Image (cartoon, rainbow, N blue to C red):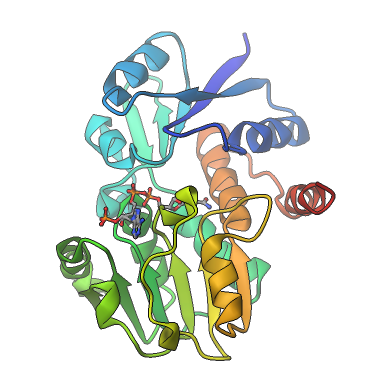
Length: 275
Ligand code: NDP
C-alpha cells in the first residue's frame, strides 16, 4: 500500500511541500503520497489524531501549528526538544510520534552551502520570535556567530527566547525600534511577508555588506527583500532553498534516504522566472 504523508497549516494554499516531496519520492523511488491539509486554527489535535489513526506515517507542520505539534508528540530529537517547536512528525513502529525540527538545518545549509556564506563571527539579526525562530536558533548558534540579536513585535517573546538559548552563545532580545546598527546577516522570520507587510525596521540596520534572508518565498521578491534591496543590501535570498533543504531533512528522517536538492531548486527557480 502507498505510504501517506501530509503538510498541515493555515494558510496552506501557497505550500510547495507536496510538489517537493513527490519529486523526492520519484527521484529516490519511494512509494508514497503527500498532500496538503488546511486545518482550522483550533483544529490541530483533531486533524493530527485523525491523520495518524488512518495510517498516516509522517506530517510536516507549518504556520501556526509548530508549538501545537510539540505538545502533541511523544518523543523528541534533541534539536526539537531544544526548539520546543516541531515541523516534522514521524509515526514510529509502536504508534508513538517522534518529533523533529528540520528548519534550522535547512536554513543553515541554504546559507552556508548553497549560497556559500560563512556565519562564523558574523553579527546576525533575527526578525520574529515564533516557531521558526525557535527552530533555527540552535543550528545558527552552532555556526559560532559573533552574536545573534532577536527583534520582535512582542518584545517579551524575543527576551524570553534570548534567555532560553543564552547558554549556547551571545543572544539578546529587543523590540524593532531598539535595533539601529548594521548587521552582517539579517533573517526575516516574521510571518509579516505572508500578508505583504513589512515590520517597522530602521534602514540603518542595512549596510552595503549586509546579506538579507527572508524565510518567506513567492513568485516575486518579498516585501522585506524588496525593502532590503532599496536600502542597499549586498544580497537578498528568499526561503525557497530553506524550504527544499528542510524538506530533504524530513524526508531522510521518514524514509532513511537522502534526496538531492540542487536540481529541484533550480527547476523551481526556473519555473518562477518563466511565470
Ligand atoms: P509564527 O506564527 O510562530 O510566528 C510569527 C512571527 O511573526 C511572530 O514573531 C510575530 O510577532 C511575527 N509577526 C507576524 N505578523 C507581523 C507583522 N505584521 N509585523 C511584525 N511581526 C509580525 O510563525 P513561524 O515562526 O512558524 O513562521 C514565520 C515565517 O517563516 C512564516 O512566513 C513562514 O512561512 C516562514 N518559514 C519558512 C520556512 C521555509 O522553509 N522557508 C520554514 C519555517 C518558516 P508577535 O510575536 O508579535 O506576534
